Length: 303
Image (cartoon, rainbow, N blue to C red; front, side, top):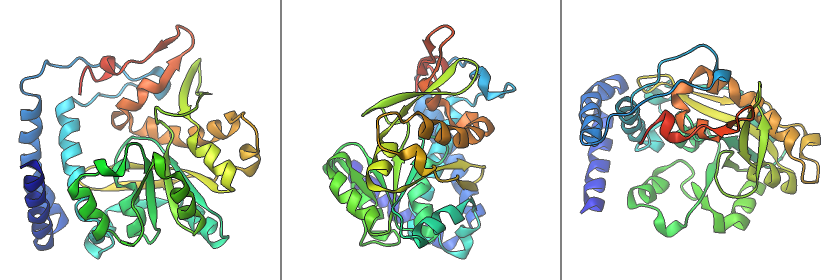
């Protein structure tokens, strides 16, 4: 029944999107998302919030979990229109900085890996990259059999439908072939599987980073570019692509600290600018002065 409900919602929203301007569609869905979010948490204990880590900078308000859930619902709706994001009415909703780094790498025939964290509107990275003309896929955990029917429908509707939008951990050889033929692979830096390193931040703080993207770029001679996508409100987004990691940082060996520092240095400004969109990421920061890890329950209490 859930599958049928998802499909009906999928096609209904796609039909409505064709009829309304983007801002009008947002206004129609906003009260629905607000009510849905409130109902989701209506029977759950009220959350406590904690301040952001001190390296973030001046204190900022922490959004309630209902507000975060509402944003989640609205942004997931945008993902239902992957082939429409390249249209005139949608394309201007996403500002892009640093696209030349990606273009240059492809012109030079280099495989490309984009390193990201699960912050902001990260789930839309692949959709918007495809909308801008770059065949992109994401390396994810799990198995293809777990992919829901709506996600499989979106795969067929996305630009470059003949190319996979995701690769699973047991499909690494296929993912390598994917980038070797000129496509773009997104790999998470905050995955909780595989080898991890502690990357210094400042004032005793470190960040626990997965090394999968670094090791993969080193092994296959790929350009490794940090990227992030932040929500700027009311279905406006900003996609940032940073400077590629210098090849010397990807030299053979097991000391990936320099590459990790380069990646984190370029991602931190976006985290500091939008800490309210990075709450789950703060569980990976450690303060060596008291050896305490920020636990998700102190920031989120519960999702």
